[in-house]
Length: 356
Ligand code: CP
Image (cartoon, rainbow, N blue to C red; front, side, top):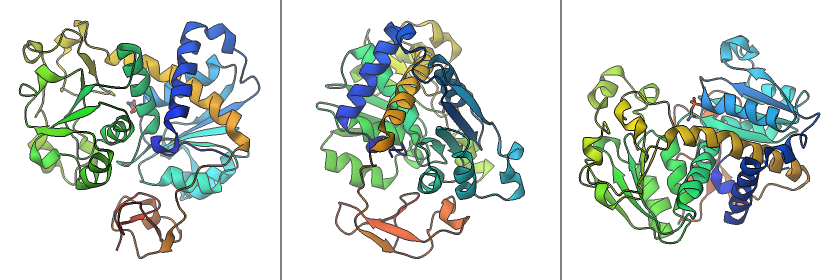
């Protein structure tokens, strides 16, 4: 059975196939109106969401299926102490496929080990949000017609922003893509993104501290929110709030065919005046989320009898994970690490934090 825990679970060929299917679903929705008749999607959202949960639910209805689930941990038995492992096992008796969002990193991975149906990671803490990345890829494809030869500026909270990490991991696999990482030093991408993702991929990257110094060269500007909920303290968050605000003045030197993206929700990082600029594509991006999730649900259901490609041949026992948000510190799970392809680096199998 296949799950979607991170975008790297998909080959480039499978991503192309999914994007092509989503494009066909956009062009001829009627053709797909009954392909999931009788199937049920469970949306288990232990964290708030508007776009992801509702677009998953809309996607399943568009395919003729049904939806069940909850939108907050408080209305599930998690409030009584039920584990993710048990929840996943139980719900897989009620649904054919599960989309799950959880604040703990590695939660979807744990669910995939217990569920009898495909698990889709709809966001696990600061770790990964692969269906946002697929949404972003569909948007890039619709706007640019290709994933190659693009200069992508990612701006804002690059430290805690899971959407940015997933996007960089996905896009660095394409030819001719270069990145401009726009953030104050304190919010730059974590070191592992440089040493284990960007450097090995060979994709060129530069750093910038302001939008103005980067804007002229960009084909895509991907804005992100400062992730208040992931900061260790309110004081720390307030230091960075409002650090980057895109307005029409900052767009004066931008290319005429720049694509401005944002996973949303925004706080104040894109001024409302930008919304009517033809280069602003973030509302279209949110709409694309429904179509790519339609394609994903259908493909995962089709793949039920194929096995998950595994890179975890080198699994070894390890101590407690150092990441305080890792699910292995909250549920009774074996403490395991995987040896990555890079020399001797061990990572927690749940949240991918470096272990000793
Ligand atoms: N982009 C995104 O994940 O939005 P939601 O939190 O509203 O699902």
